[in-house]
Length: 299
Length: 299
Image (cartoon, rainbow over all chains, first blue to last red; front, side, top):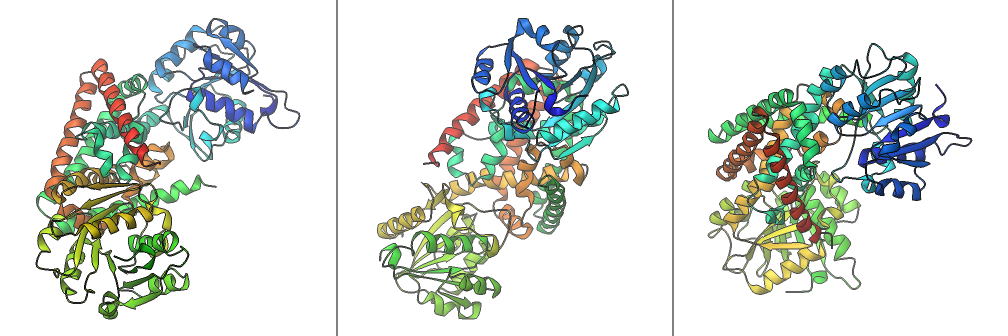
């Protein structure tokens, strides 16, 4: 592989995540002296392409009908579409990628993608399965920032067919974009864990909004309710797809969570203050240990 | 009443909230030119008093055994103790307050306090029931900041015996400390709403920590889980007291919340993507309207 700064990157889908990738590459990689690399992008609507061009964030924008031309030029292709569309795109453009290219994605669920791809990718193209753990509740290129990835986690799911050289390149790229922790795991474990840290949290936030008596409830807010429901400003089509794709794991986590709510309910109903206080002490202790893990990311 | 800047303030309990009140008064009121007011504080342990004195935040610290002397000097007394201790303190020191003083509190539940106080306060002392909607997951004076109250809500529950002059004074004081929205309501409504915005959120955060398979889960975190569980670094004795004092309202809200989780569960189980997407659209729309209410606070 070439050096990061001499690589040609192509981003498919210039929304909030594609936009952040473009901006992070521009800010942290192609700003180096002597860089000869480029960033291209393709998107269904033209407005984000025009904006990114005008801002100097991309070297060229490609309409969707010209995406094959873009793919033929790129050493690294970031597919930043919804999960189902990601699989479909890679299959549809099987013959368009440059020989030797790395193709990678950002999808929040992986089982259908990994299991659906073996026939969908050419032997001379390497598909690296990954998940940048970052984002924002606002959508679109206009809300993307180069700083989104600073101190964040990135999950990589190496496949038997990935070359060491390509995995090493991706780790360099991920680190250069600002991520501080790369976790390697198996795709089924990813889908199990993400159903908890990401999807369950969005389910909780959504249920918490819907259980509010009215929209004026935040007059009585001290920050907790606002913080817990910020992610409920949700992209409904995307999250419906994510929830459905990972529903078995998600249902398991919802049930485990309700079981814990029932423990607290029972303490309240039986007025068992001693048990409740012990439970909350355990919660605090467990969460504090998680904080120490968080702090690795602050390096 | 005197002007804010010529008033003698006394804070009982110099923890995170008492500390923030002291610092906000010092920074935003007693910094005015010609100010002759003072801030005193009393606390069980002496360390916060020494620290606050050394930092110039209080004019004098009073050991708990000398608190009667402090109360005799103060025009405004902020009782910043746990709920049960607040009621007990005001009763125990019934005869120690200065004639004409305002006594106020920060307690997160009010029913026991309001219903327990009629015999506990002298006719020449005015008890103003209030709740500053702010705080932090870290405890103690050392973690308090003058800026805690900026753009926050303050709930006032005027009682029939409160004078207009005293309520007006409190509103000036609250605004000067940085709060941007004062909501007036009845104490039972306060306890109902707060059981939702504050206590339910702490229950959810706690259950979400306990349903994590292990403490390494944040390796798979993208921010949502970390944000939703930050308040689970909980002060167990305080929150046990708050949960128990407001358990009837809290149980109602937990049940309503679980009902909403069941709606989502059913959509997943029946693979009703259409209904789920509609539900999430409603969530988004409802939460966006709440955001607009939030934004009042950003003035």
